[in-house]
Image (cartoon, rainbow, N blue to C red; front, side, top):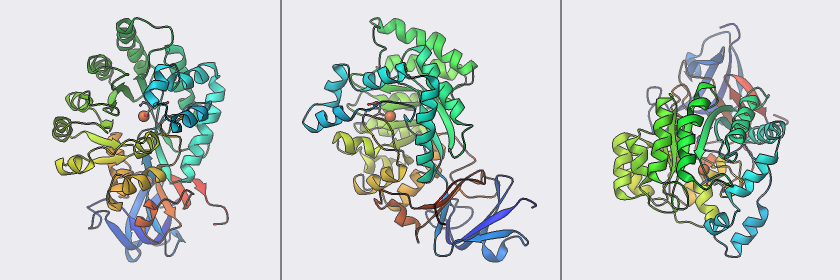
Amino acid sequence: LTSAFGVAAARVMTCDPSVASGALSVIEEGVVVVDAGRIAYVGPRAGAPEGVSIEEFGERVVTPGLVDAHTHACWVGSRHAEYAARMKGDGYQAIARAGGGILATHRAVAAASEECLVQALVARLRRMASLGVTTVEVKSGYGLAAAHERKQLAAMARARDAPGVPAIVATLLALHALPPGVTDRAAFVARVAGAFVPSVAAEGLARFVDAYVDEDAFSVAEARAVAEAARASGLGVRLHVDQFADVQGAELAASLDAASADHLEHVSASGIAALARAQVVAVLLPVASFTLGQPPPPVAALREAGVRLAIASDSNPGTAPTESLTLAMALAVRLYALSPDEALLGVTRHASAALELRDRGVLRVGARADLVVWDLPHEHAIVQPWGVAKTLSVRVEGREIFRAAGS
Ligand code: NIG
Ligand code: FE
């Protein structure tokens, strides 16, 4: 254990049932020892390896690094005027039909250089890191046309090398809106499925493919064609489903063995049963339903059916103008009636499952040393609506990507 170091605190939330009992498997007076980017020890102080320098955090809590499993963080521009119009009564879907919404951000992204996207993305990801996020899924989907979609994915790849950012999981949001000027939907979808998805996969630019399956968006048949192309190219599938209407998007996600089905405000009973059977993770996006003034998804029925619940920020300039996963947790508790334990699992173990990542979201020997020290005395305090960073130290593979000033 040459390069090893440790952190100690009154509470270490492991989320690993093999380490400790209780919903969050908390170790009291615990130590986490990190060696070469991995966890080498997690347990009581008494059992910690000797000769390792340990930083003492006292009456604080240590958790796995948070995983934000659904964001659209690669964008530029501003949609503040649309927000004001919506507060005066204009509808989100009506604004989109009139050429605003996704198309407004598309115009800004299409006009931006790759370098400009990298800068905006990196700045945003650093702010996310300061709030405790160590892995973030980022979707394309504002480029719409192949060249601009590729530019977004290239910006994500470059952002990985910047200091102070979480690990990035790139998703090609292949069907988000029709590019301006495209009138032949069928030909567009066929081109995306037949040519664009395979080439993105071959270039290693994305790990997942996503599609927006909803009324005024894409149909189940269109999304199925693109998702099957993703599968055939070795990529995973995650889907935006049933946000504005029940279009049987959840049933589609289940039939495709998708990693996640996201939104679900209008999911049907049969959709819930299908998600449970196929063990698809439900990604809840409470900032979006809060911003749109929508009622919550049927959380009690999802829970009852045994569907794992993840929570994500949905960070985007239209329906979720936030960068804060902790705000999403607070709203999941306040508006969706998740328990604090559910909210915490929703951004750790279950969020990792939603991204098909087995090496994080828990503090366990051998897992990545992605962890957060919170300036809070208990893990349940994390879900209160602070609106500010309550982190002291945030580490990715042992490397500190954020440290609170003066700590
Ligand atoms: O997840 N629902 C579609 N896509 C985004 C919103 C995108 C936008 O308005 O820019 C969402 O809510
Ligand atoms: Fe989204």
